[in-house]
Amino acid sequence: MKKWSQYAVAIGLIVLLIYALKPEVGSTHGHRRDDYMNASAHLRSAAIHVTGWMSSGTRIKHLKSLDDLPADCIPYRDRRYFDPESGRAFDWLYYGADYRSTYPSNRFILMAAPTLFGPAKDDPNKLDNAFRVVVYLDTHTERLTEKEFRQRIQLQQQDIIKEGTYEK
Amino acid sequence: MKSKHLWFIVSLLVVTVLLFAILVPHVPSPPPIAITAPASMHASQTVRALHAYSHSETGPRNFPDNLHQLEEALDVNYDITKYRDPESGVYYEWLYYGRDVSPLEDDQFYPNSNILIAVPTLFNSEGLYPEEGEEGMRIVVYINGRTEVIPEQEFIQRIKQQMFER
Image (cartoon, rainbow over all chains, first blue to last red; front, top):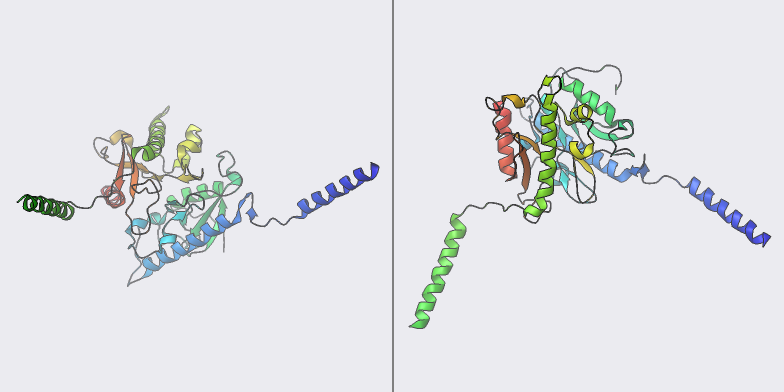
């Protein structure tokens, strides 16, 4: 009987060890890494098409809304964010209408994902633990906490450049 | 004689159907109300919260620049400030057009036909997301809280006009 209990304890310890050492494949901060990576890739691709259209021709064009883009300018899969579960597509958040040429392109948030990622994505009281995928005018993407995203958007809309925190 | 009459009636019917198909412009049919009603009700709830925000204790004020300001001011949760996809349960941002808009100047500058909130996804006649090339319908809520389901092209035109008027 004693032997059996020793075996059980040993097996339990092994299971615990395996669980503890299990690599966190496919998850970042409690949500599926695939979803975040997908959103980031599609957002970047969309931004490349948008900025490509803006800079095509003889002068830089000001794009007030994504709806002003020609229909074939962005591939169908990048035109909106596709929810991996429901298959529905949701409009990107677009901030290009506020752009002034004095704003550095590596600091100006051009577009953002329409949803949040992270363990607290459903809790408005934990904005430090919810993440927003954004793409800047120079088409590099970043993951910001929702709190920081909101602050930056407010400053951006007032044409205020926040210094020092996000040099690339 | 009888078969002649029959042929005449049949050909008349065919011609009528063809004429109808050619002359009546193609208008995408809206999804059934059972599908759009929850989203419409949800969106008009947000509009009511926006009106509550604009009539604050300190006096009247413009609608907020962003919906998260509404969240902070009224201490409401995401069920008010975001659209919840019923299939995946994920929250998405509404399309919001209230920045720099004063609800108190409705009669003079911002007619009730101005869109304040739109659902961030599209529906086809079966309530699904439209396939590539298929035109979808958009659920919108006007400043006065009235909701409507309109074709996406019309929605784009109206938003452009709204931006131009400002």
